[in-house]
Structures are given as structure tokens and as C-alpha cells.
Image (cartoon, rainbow, N blue to C red; front, side, top):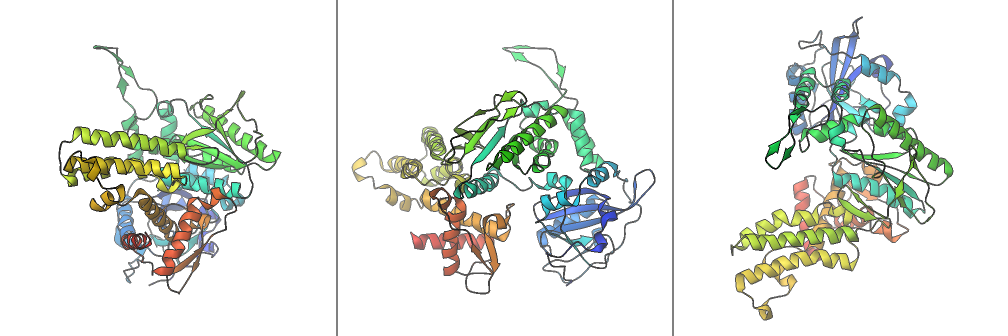
Length: 555
């Protein structure tokens, strides 16, 4: 099997400036595997005469699942998968490789993306993606040496930054920055933006132009264009309908494709604010930017980022709602800085709902725990009101399907630390098992066993144990690169040949209770105990079974 360059290697001469300048398409399937389309020869009219395709990966080889994706990609661009050079961890053979001459499908224009790439300087590329390394694991072009990519630019950021993210991982990433800064005595100003009727205001022509610029295949662009245009609407009042009117903007509410289209439309925003050293987190139409404020220059930089987003919103016809754009201040300093959206000063708030998680300026989630406990308790009541069955199996399925997701989603983010919040959440399950016991045995309160016996009887672990399991599973995913979060942001991982697995983790000691109770410290300390006691498997399913065993022994 061919060996690839070390991840720390520089970009080889085979990938020099002329080749980089004509990279015109980059599609990311997940955090680890992507496809990079390059043009080896461009005609005088700006069209690609000869192109090459590289499949790139964060790892030096690709596994079977990624190989299947690779073959699908090859077929999608009218290339026989057999002509792609690739290696895989399970396969020692190397397919023949060949250069692509004038493509069998339609040619693709490269002009606009080339111009955007030319405007990027080396410093911007290094700042944005200097820590990421991709290996060429397959190509249609004859390469003397497989290479590693240590570059990217704004265009690549806006396609790959949000890939594979969830509300949980985005919150973990933001809270990691915030708790780390607060642990060092910093003060953070967070700006939450709100677009006025965001999904309804996206203009069609501008959206289509962005889809073309990022390099989507013309067939896909045309399909999306037909999907979002040509629609009409009517207003119903009682039994009367208004005349039909055409829809002139917006993406369909509730559609699976709509959040993706909105992300593509707003994908320039992280690049706009990064030039001021401001961090940005986006999930569909939920956008927040933040910066650690240690001097007036930091405040000016954050204000400049706000102004840049405002200018972008005006240019791209997606207006911001000033009353709903909020300032959220974190830190010991009680002196709040003033920020403006145009001529309007932003109002501050002490509590905010961020991606479904309610938090306050102390970064505690007591309000969130109260809200989800009340909602889950209401669902428990409806289950027993709606279902007359006495089958524990059926009622347990209903509980696990409708109640647990309310209590447990994002548990790594809001994991309760106060006794009141823990008791409030546990009370929901206790209420369910008590109602279930009464359904089976009648209203005999004197003989109703306590909660821990009912949990054992119905084989339901406590919520606290399940949250600890979620912590350990998420820590494993971050450390092993199975989730779209940079490992080195949370832990320092060093290779190991001792008992406990192929890697050891270290993390900075916390100075405050806020930091010590956050996921990084909380999960990391338990993960260390687990790795010292057992040899950690590579399979996630086997690891979860090992965690169950470990938690039962620790109970």
C-alpha cells in the first residue's frame, strides 16, 4: 500500500500557485472526506478544457464507507470509478490511473471562483485553515507523489465549516471558548443576530448566483431553481380565499433543503467577521458572533464585525431586525460596552435562548432544566391519558420515544450541577415509573416501592447515569475524530502504547467552578479513569457497551 506524506508536510510543488489558482469546485460530504475539482487547462474563453479530480480526506487512507462515497462521486461527474487511483485500509490493490481529457459531460465555467481565490492572500488562507490537513487519497490525475493539503480559503470555509454540525456540537464549541476565557478572568461580548423573516426574504436571483459560484452542477442548480420559483400563495379567512399571488422571494418553510440553502446564502458571514479576529457560530438562521474584550481595540473590532454584517445584509437584501438583535455579556465586569446596528444601540439581555438551550449570564442552565422538565412532565401525563394499555413494554416505548428526547437532547451542554435541577429532571422519570406502577398494581400507595426500585424493576437507568454516558461517548467522538469538532480545541492527545488504548489525553486544570463543571473537564476526568481501567476499543458500538459496564460498576 502506498504511504502518504506526513500531515505536517508542506504543500508540495505539484500543488503550486498556478494549480491552486484554478481550483473551481470543492464539495464536502462530511468533515473527513471531500472532492476537489481542479482545472489543468483553461481555454481562452475561460472554460475548462482539462480537469482533474482529487478525493481528499483528513486521514491518510479511506475506509469502506468513504470508498463507496468516492465511487458515487466519480459516477456523478461522468468518470469511471476504475480510473481513479485510490487506496483503502482494507484493500492493498491500486487501481489504474489516467488523466481526464476534455470531459465527457458538460464543461464548467471557473471564472468567478478563480477571481475570489486570487483575492485571498497567504496570511488569510493560513489564518482560516492553517490547522487543517487533508490527504489526497484518490485522483484522476497522474501524480508522482500523493500530497497533503494544508490550505483553504473563504470559499472552502463557507462550504465545510457547518458540515456535520448539530446544535449540540455548535453549543459545545462556543461554550468551550466562553468558559475557557472566563476561567482566565476574561470578559466576552456575544451578539445574537436576528434576520427579519429570514427564510421568507431570501431573494431568488442572488441565491441562484451563489449556488453557481460555489460550483454546484448546473443540473442541481436548475433543479433548485425550479423548486423555489414558480410558487404562489393565497390568504384564507374563514372559508374565503384571496386572489393568488406569485412568491417572489424565500425558501419553503419546513423543507429539508431550506436550511441548507440559507446556510449557503449566508456563508460569507464567517469570512467577513474573521478578518477582525471575531468568532462566528452559525446554524441555519441562528447567527452569533463573539469576542473576548480586554481592551478598547477589541470592542472596536466587534463593532466593526457588526457593521460588516449589516452592510452584507443590505447588499444581499436580507434585512436584520434591530429589536431582536441582542447583546449578551459574560464575565465579572459589570460595565457593558455599547454596540450599534446602524444608528440603533443594541439592547442587552441576561437570559437568551441559544439553539434551543436557555442560558443566563452565569452560564448556568437551571432555567433550561425547568423548562424541559415541565414540557416532559406534560408529555408523561398525556401518555397515560391517551394510552389505556397495561403493557409495560408499550408504555416504556412511548416514554423512551417521546419523553427521553426532551430530557436528554444536548445533555452534554446543559448537564445540571445544582441539586435542584438534578432533582427536577429525575422527578419526571420518577413520575412516569410511579404512574406505570399504579397502572399495573392499582392505587396502593403504601406498597408502592421507592423510585430506585421501580427503575430497577423496569430496567430504566437514572437520568444522571445516562448523562454521564453521553459525556463519555461525546468525549470519545471528539478524541477519535468521529464528530465535527477539532480535538485540539478540547484536549491534547498524545499517542500511547500503554494499557488503555492508542492515545492519552491531557487538559488544562480549571481555576473556577464554572470551568471545572463544563464538559471538557467533567467528561475528560471520567474518560481518564475509564482508559486506565480498560483497553478502549476502536468501534463506537463496542465503546458504548464498555461505558455501560463501567458506569454500572461505578454506581
